Amino acid sequence: MRVRASLVLATLAAGSVAAEPVVPVFEPRPIPPHVYAGGWEHFVGGGLASFDCNGDGRPELYAAGGTEPAALMRNVTRDGTLAYAEDTPDALALTGVTGAYPLDIDGDGLIDLAILRAGPDRLMRGTGDCGFVPFEGLGFESGDHWTTAFSATWESGQTLPTLAFGTYVDRTDPDGPFEACDDTLLYRPDGGRYPPPQRLSPGFCALSALFTDWHRTGRADLRLSNDRHYYVRGGEEQLWAMEAVPRLYTKADGWRSYHLWGMGIASRDINGDGYADVYLTSMGDQKFQMFDPEDGGPAYRDASYDFGTTAHRPFTGGDGRPSTGWHAAFGDVNNDGRDDIFVAKGNVEQMPDAAMLDPNNLLLQGADGRFSEAADAAGIATLERARGAVLADLDGDGFLDLAVVNRRAEMELYQNAGTTGHWLAVELRGPAANSRGIGAFVEVEAGGRRHVQEVTVGGGHAGGSAGPLHFGLGDAETARVRVIWPGQAPGAWREVATDKRVTFP
Image 1 (tube, helix red, strand yellow):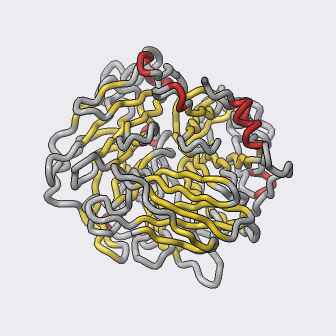
Image 2 (cartoon, rainbow, N blue to C red):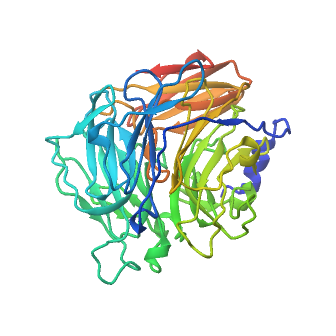
């Protein structure tokens, strides 16, 4: 039997108190000036990464700059007030940066960076205290690509991660830019080195990539969200089966052909069935797709209107043209035990059929499972051309804060002033090489509900976060937690008190 959105909504509503979600207050905080700038090669990109690079438990921010140097912002929060100071080492002050993703590539316990560029991509090794140097000895070589998507995973038996770089338009194609999409480049390690990449062809101008174990069988496959503005025809969203020779899932596998101006991917189990659903941003509207585990294959069905998540036009600002979504993130911003959705919005540049005044969205999930708009009331409905963002607990108080990179406008920082709702932060520390447990599933039981999150590197738009998984838990003062490490049986349940960070070795 296929899961219907109406049945899911009924299930979510059953046993829940019918109450409007609490709207959090986000207070603006100063941040050193930083702008994502540049010509058409930087119409897309503008990613933001968050990670703790000095071991103090508070994440730093690394922001793409386009034609301006990328910037590292050190977290200098004191006395409960969220604050950052720019402290960019020379190795990270690169131009041409479209985005970045943090991960521990060499398994030494320190966060490294995969930096995406309009130009050769970089792998930078973390040396501690926010120092970075180029990796040596890995064999990684990048051509002069226009890179706009990234994801990573650890395949069975490997000591290095498999890396996927999604490239956009082939700038060397004399017949481009339309129908000139470049391929996605897959770096599969051979022992301790990377041979030349495999080309995943056809490529359809990937703007977001995510390795995800969608079927929970221990193998992550590669999902790509592609921009039909340049592939024009013959393209679609893609899911690559990571077999010995990667292959595309097709209709015969249960995959449904889907076409959109894809910008970003967010993934989270919304209906509590243990399988991740997806939220896809685009130019025109945003798509919420529910996974159907009973189908047996990668079957996702659109539930955008049933759940009120389309966010297809600006809700303020007076511009009624269609919206353009970029970075999307799930997260429980009011700690009521229900995940919400943040979407960064902004015109590509001067697209006449799309809104120029396009506020970011904050979609709060109610007790009935439906989402409602709250960005204006929350204080984050700015009208700049947003691109990348981070929704994470930046000050360590248990509430999710927000940072946003804008195109040709200053970066923004907001502190969540939340005071109600319990929470839990779960951090994984595995043995080398996969020291951060990428590919693991964390399950939390509290208040009569099971919450599931997968540890991934990728998704969003051109940027991501490395750090504890955040769970909002409502009124629950205690919880049970277990970890399913990649390729292993579920671990034992651990009883914990809420409102703290816990680490699983």
